[in-house]
Amino acid sequence: MSNPSTMSVIPPPVPSASVQAIPKFTIEPVVWIHQWNPGLMSLRIHRDPAYTFRPGQFARIGLTKEDGEIIWRAYSIVSAPDEAFLEFFLVVVPTGEFSSRIAKLKTGDTMHVEKISQGFLTTDRFKDGRDLWLIATGTGMAPYISMVRDSAVWRQFENIIVVQSVREHRDLAYTDELDQLARQRRSAAADAGAAQAKLIFVRTLTRETIDGALHGRVTTLTDSGELERDARLVLDDVHSRFMLCGNPDMVEAMRALLKARGFRMNRRLEPGHIIVENYW
Image 1 (tube, one colour):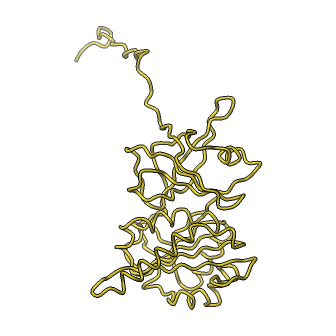
Image 2: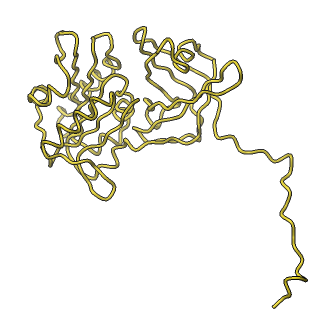
Image 3: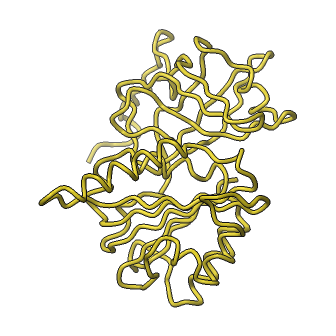
């Protein structure tokens, strides 16, 4: 054994001043902006080719303040995994530190995007089930649009039911896209020999009554059975799987209502029926 007193000590290497930390984000231009109403907007930014995600996950995006500080916020991704852009759907709060700035962006302006996507509101967590109920309030719709734009989700379920609950008709978003997709899925399913999953799109308004939409809170409509009658599908523990995203009050109330009917939370070691995401 060597004598410790005679052993030479090798000092640790000194980092080279030229070696820099690898950035955790990319800087991407805004390529498209759409205003749904004064308080709701969607935007698309260029997507770095190395950026990957699963439908239902969220990205952290950032804006640089006047003093150089970067403000970061997390938003669910609306775009599909194979699209060349990252799309986001958000509420514009005039006094909000982030959204008030994002509302002033123009195409060509840039944003920061963290390189790693996050989140567990993904359909691969369900190992079985026939009917996927995607229930949202407001901008909680964002991850569901990503899902219905992705072909892999359609191979997993026979029926996808998108339930969008808002206060007024002007707060509805992506309705034209969902209506068109529902028609396309019906047409494909009607073709001889075609086995196509169906899209069922249910609108609910809490402060207005209009043709083509249910009236009332989604919890009330579920409890009364009106939601099932409108979708023409029955909620049962063999076939039904649920995702809840949006207002935390809705998420908690729906979770309690479904649990009272025998549905269980889906966990990694204990498969169940419900996955939730509080959207703010």
